[in-house]
Amino acid sequence: MLSIFLRNPQFQGQTKDRLVSTDATRQTEQAVRDRFDQWLSADASRANFLLEAAIEKADERKRRKKEKEVARKSATKRLRLPGKLADCSSSDSEITELFLVEGDSAGGSAKQARDRKTQAVLPLRGKILNVASASNEKLSSNQELSDLSLALGVKPGKDFHLDNLRYGRIIIMTDADVDGAHIAALLMTYFYSEMPQLVEAGRLYLAQPPLYRLTQGGKTVYALDEEQRETSLTEVFDSRGKVETSRFKGLGEMPPAQLKETTMNPDSRRLLQVALPLRDTVGADLRRHTDQLVNTLMGKKAELRFGYIRDHAEHALANLDV
Image 1 (tube, rainbow, N blue to C red):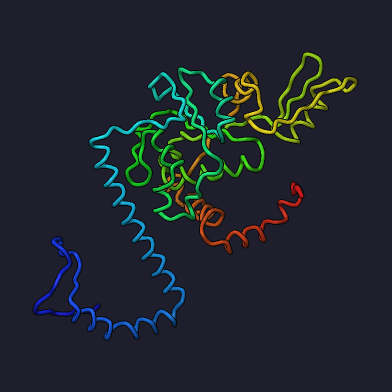
Image 2 (image 1 turned 90 degrees about the vertical axis):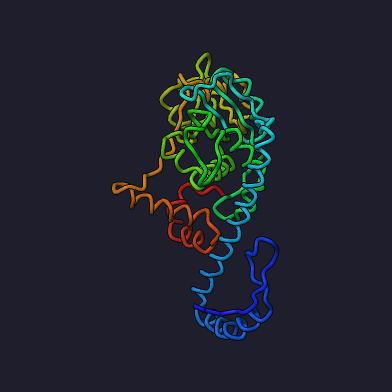
């Protein structure tokens, strides 16, 4: 703690929120600078902690300043929904759904396959920002995430209110390949970091589009992966006839009728609900484990991911595609 008494203090501007007396600056530097430099050099871990905390606080101040500017603008100008959002006609959050799809191509097929009354579609442009490793400044200036929160009708972070959510279900619908899984992981990270209440309430889902279409005569079966395809070939179809197999390159190449039947129609689709343990007496340990896992896999420190890959490499050898 440093205490200095000044006879004639000088402040910056009318708000007087910053001291600019040159005598105070000189005395403070003489008393603190060399000793503080030595302390930081001697304890690198605590020095890094202080640096990260200072950067985090600076980003938080910038984010709050920008939120105030947006609030002032929205007071006189009504915010509109994103232009690429194909909204549904119903406003009943008990029955409405928002599909998040990758790219305009998949968005076009999804818009044709949807139920216009209850299903809305928002195309996203490629892979979104990894919010676990991005600064608050990048997060607040990202257009894709801004459009997403605008379509949902809620604000991310501390200002999130579940009652303002415009849809009952948020469904991540990406291609059934590695890139699609990566985009889904980035979106789940965003909701986990910025809107955890949405996930805790069971509102977030993953669509399960098929990877293969198997046809023999008039019989058609869809398979989610290689294992299900092999099972269908041996158990569903006649081994004496030829089975035509087609692999979907992406949702955009799937005809709207097939996309509706396999992925969007509530009567025939399959969904995975994304669950998140609560921070209560029952789920506290599981939630801490989830926090640690997300930080390891999606956070800023690459050495944590390297350690995780090294420790779990043997589990991936069986499914490694080189």
